[in-house]
Length: 72
Image 1 (cartoon, rainbow, N blue to C red):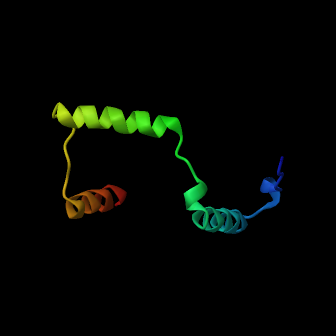
Image 2: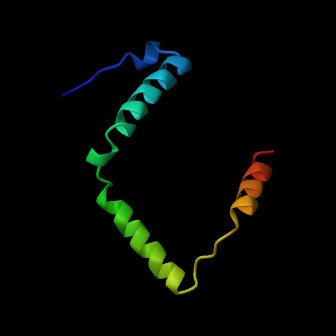
């Protein structure tokens, strides 16, 4: 099936509304969704890096603050 939307003619608000409608629909069918294979590969690589001590973690509040600070 091929779907064509008049993206050039749509406002940003209209595009966001379409994205939200699609996301809402997908969220109702989450049990039917399968993650792509590359997700597993990335998670496996991260697990190895954690075991080797090559990855570090921050407390959630500190990570949020660092993100906020980077936006200013």
